[in-house]
Length: 249
Length: 308
Ligand SMILES: Cc1cc2nc3c(=O)[nH]c(=O)nc-3n(C[C@H](O)[C@H](O)[C@H](O)COP(=O)(O)OP(=O)(O)OC[C@H]3O[C@@H](n4cnc5c(N)ncnc54)[C@H](O)[C@@H]3O)c2cc1C
Ligand SMILES: Nc1ncnc2c1ncn2[C@@H]1O[C@H](COP(=O)(O)O)[C@@H](O)[C@H]1O
Image (cartoon, chains in turn brown, orange):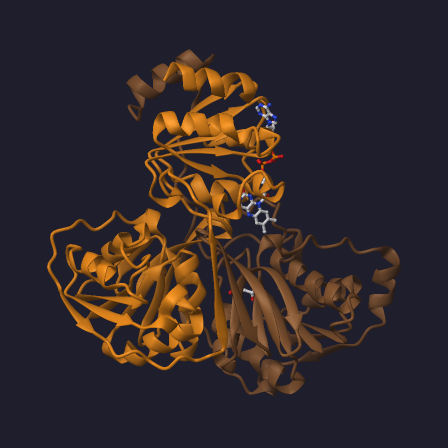
């Protein structure tokens, strides 16, 4: 079966982000970028399913600026077979991403779509569920295990109280949680191989999708700072502070 | 204005985030209705009717709403959406699962995880793991919103809203609910606890979490964890606090053997008082702590339990 995965290019999760002084956003110039960690998990899952003989082809899709080609190359170095970039410099919000991804799904007809649960820049946690709704397909969000059995899949989802198990009909959309797998590192030979894999570039207009933003960002600010704390010498001092100063115990 | 709040509940009682979401609805203004959907959840509907500020409760009781399966929840909400200007749910695993589906069906860009209401179309939400706060204005006709509970006080009791039955929609039949494995605990729930004691990789093993549990029991606290502690298998996934785990803001958060990665801080830095215990004097967690103790946790934690 064919699997489609989505990969977003984001600021590296271990970089400390800085809010721009004019309040319009965060600093992205000369900042290290990376594949969204949840998308890495999505690619890894697809590749493992291909290695297990369940999946025949993996198509990776990204929406964004030209440099997203690098992110697609990384996905191909991990094992995706080809890439599709919907190239735009516009701010595409999750509903717009979902509509673009749906348009590509209509064309590609995959049996399974694996997306990250959340992009760690906008922290929206929406696009996967939206794609699933637009297609009228079943969804499994925050997935920590998938077993495909013919025309359905048994999935385990992480929920607030523990775990939940569902059987979903295929085709379906799955979003990944952290514990689905541990993504592999890309190797140099695979990076070289990935350079030869097909990468198609499309414009949103070619897909006939309206991606006009619905949310306007009025300002972006630093969160309130916590005031500096104090070092305590020992447990006795800690207990005294908590009792007499903070009065929380 | 007419606001719909979708209640998270276990059939009998409301889950903690629901009352906070009602407060967010009150800040938007207008009439507030609460939807209680589930199977055999009349008690939860009564609990919703007692929340202050609630005008009416809509009860949708059918077997295919058990477990709040996303496809069925979204279709139900879509069916009544035209009556409302705003649709809100807590930004918990429950709300995050089906609300984007509601938004897509209504052709609306959801506003995720709001921590403040500026006006009926403008809201504040954290981005980049809470390292920046964005103020966003929605141009959509209906606002579909998930609410970060720690940004709003819980609505009190004292209401006496009428409970109306809502005809159940069809079962989409796209997925089959095979049950849940819930972690059992006599301790308070993480998102409702006044005090939380959290352990990280420094705990070394699941067995060692016993010393944290002893401290938690002494304080009547909930137990949480960093991702590293969960990934190492020390504790179940639902203990995880952080950007991609639970967001908490208790009166007292005690971080033990946790380094303080930004993804962890994202989930707890709004706590009123933060205590950090770490043997590394350079641990980044100390930057957000009110009180910090540089010591081996295997010495400090039992001592703390004993001195309380
Ligand atoms: C996409 C993404 C999402 C993430 N989401 C989350 C999330 O939601 N929540 C989360 O927590 N993390 C999350 N992380 C992981 C995060 O980046 C860190 O890796 C993680 O928080 C580290 O956990 P830790 O502090 O327990 O472990 P470490 O960083 O290994 O720190 C262990 C600490 O214990 C101390 N220690 C060790 N032994 C002792 C001792 N005997 N006594 C006292 N102190 C001791 C050490 O000095 C050290 O500071 C996420 C990461 C990514 C990429
Ligand atoms: N611009 C994008 N390009 C590719 N995939 C995306 C993009 N935006 C979101 N996604 C996918 O949708 C998931 C959820 O994103 P979000 O709803 O923005 O938190 C991400 O983990 C990605 O897999």
